[in-house]
Amino acid sequence: MLKQANTSSSHVRHRLVSALLITTGTSCTVALAGAALAVSPALDTIGIGNPVAGSNGFGVVTEGDALLGSTESEGPVAVGGNLAYGAGYNVSAHTAGTFVAPGDTRPAALLVGGRIDYVGSSPVGVLKVLDNGYVKVGDMAGSTARTTDANGASVNTRVTTTGGGYDSTPRIELTVAQTADSVAQSGLMDFSSLFATYRERAARMASCATNVTLLDGNGVPLPDQTDLPPGSRVKISLTDGRTNVLHLTGEQLDNITEFTFLNQPSASKPFLVVVDTMGTGGEFTWNTPNLAGVSGPQAPYMLWDFPDATDITIASGDSLEGTIYAPSAHLTDLDPSNIEGDVIVKSLTAGPLSGGSSGAVNAGEIHYFPFAADLRCEDTTSPEPTPITTTPKEPTPSEPTPTEPTPTEPTPTEPTSTPTPTPTPSGTSAQPTPEPSPSRSGALAETGAGPGTRPGLAALAAVAATLTAAGTALLVRAHGRRGRHES
Image (cartoon, rainbow, N blue to C red; front, side, top):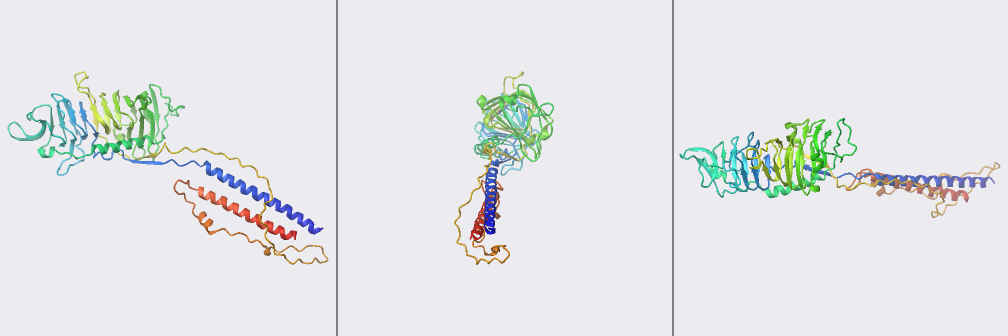
């Protein structure tokens, strides 16, 4: 009678342990699997570096032709195509730059890959190369470098038409004597390859995810970051330790009349604006906004990226801080306000020769503030995670049906006069506790993330597998004991 009661108790305990192990193991496995699925994939990081790298320190770089109508570039200029100029334009007003051609002792302040376009220049045009900079012209057809005046005296070098004299116009004049052979030099820059790289960088910057929030006048985030009606005034706060990225359409950008910077861009928190002009077929007319809180010292850490623009016109507005990066676009500057930063464009018209009140249009100055930050950002094209919420179902406890081991029949102990049964010694279990395999142990040790794996998921999977193996072992052991008790 007493033996029957113990057997029933053993059955009850066995069922409770089975239910508990199944419930716990299943719940852990489902919870861990759900957690793994819900983990957001990391966004890919885009390393861009300095987008203007390869410019050789030139503040203005064009792949094709350039017309320098008015008024000056304070830094050096590199033109991949032909060069035309207005009645009075100055190059390298503050610095001749750092690019020294092989065999020279002075930097080249003006580099022309093509030829001098005298027909397209002002008939009275004089382009002055200042700060003792040199001139490089790739194609001297129609041009002559003159190192002596009409009296045969050695003088500072000038480049004129082949049939013109030392004082003829249009002309390019230097403030230093440069040999004629040194003026005629081609192949110093590969503009085609450089601009292929620039266009690739422009597209990579366009893949950067937005991480700048537009704020209203009270510093409160705009409820709709895309709703920017004409006359909008916005504030922005930049985060240190990252590239601060803002995406705008051309229409949105032109509708903003004022950006107020609550803190200033720097090498550790550069400001990148990506402008999408596809809605207007790549054409964009820009009335530049007032940029409150920034000026020339911050310009090297600001960049305006136009990856798809083909034609940009700066019509009016305030001085623009930062680099204009439009390697596929022709830029026309009609605004007397200044550009403070690099100009990287396919071709350039800095002040047309007609249309102004006195002939040429005043396009202001291009101040020399080379871009000086390395850009790095997160990729908008990374796959978006699909959150998965899994509600684990309560399993129905059931008797597992493992293969029953053949138990070793213990020798029963005869009961004494006191009817208390002697339990089977625990050390005589017929089914040994399973040992974890070496391969699983190794997997638990290697919890680092491999390619395409989020950190920690391997550890979660290993824990789930271990729990399941332990539960199975306990169930088998429990069955073995149950068999001995029943016998």
